[in-house]
Image (cartoon, rainbow, N blue to C red):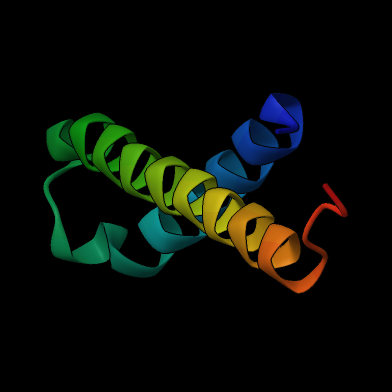
Length: 64
């Protein structure tokens, strides 16, 4: 897994989501919302990568 790429992607997604909904939140809620969005995005990107790796292994099984 490329942890740096996952972090960067999750961070950018969280920023964009916050920018979309920030007018619906109090300013003091922005940090908590960002951290929540980041955690959700990061977790889902990690799960996607795990699923992709599993799928690749199924498509190319070892010859043992």
